[in-house]
Amino acid sequence: MVGQIPTSGAPRDPGPTGVLLLDKPPGISSTRALAVAKRLLGSRKAGHTGTLDPFATGLLPIAFGEATKFSRFLFDAPKGYEASLRLGYTSSTGDPEGDIRSTGAIHVDLGKIDEDLRSFMGVQWQTPPMHSALHHQGKRLYELAREGVEVPRAPRSVQIYSLEMVSKSGENLLISVKCSKGTYIRTLAEDIGKRLGCGAFLTALRRTQVGDFSIDEAVSLEDLEALQSQGLRGPPLSPPESLVRSLPRTLLDRESGRAFSQGRVVAHEGGEGGEVAVFAAPDRFLGVGFRDGAGRLRSVRLMAAVPEADCPDFA
Image (cartoon, rainbow, N blue to C red; front, side):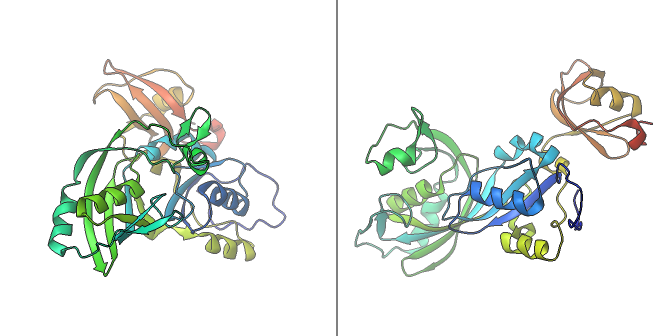
């Protein structure tokens, strides 16, 4: 975990380890936001855990240092969004950057909106939009779309856990949605417009939740800039183990913990098979292991080894 550490005159080091919850601003890509955060925190190793479109804002968890080893657990986590839709119009891209056309029909009964939104709950088949970052024969779909090329896209299964109307004012509809990974909110907005019979496209998108992480915990790039101007590296980061909170937790004694951290298979009775978050007493995170159901635990991803002289748990 990295606190507010003066950086002036400090020797070069690998940088922080942990998870930064960034509130991405509009108008920049997730990759650009990552690059700025890396510079401000003095990191040489970092990666975000799920792309946000440039026009979208909100929660972008960024893993630094050792935490990058466990980023995949957030890629698979449910996501939460607030999305603004404009009813009575369609867009060639599903968002404000496309060719906007009026359908001439925006008078929708509020009761019908609630009823139609409920119909999207559960498992849905969704066709990815052409204006997406998926690849086709070495090119991203949005690059092909800009060239006027459209290619077939296979529908994919997604799940909508909750979908509610927050407010409606004239032709503007604000919804809250919690969904599985791989869900395209711009496609959901278009599908809602079709279901309502008036057309719709996405005018704004804000990600509010990724797994257990909330936008309420996030900081902005301006916050990070302000800390740097004060000679401080950055805010406290969530520890790497926060990325694996969805996994069952298992605790090893000193001897087994030392063997596991060295990559050896250790005996471990009890519990179902599958991946687990592994700790050494009292609360030292060692990494992720796989319990095979036959009394054995092997490593999947390990935190970097700590010399025993620096680790009283293993001394």
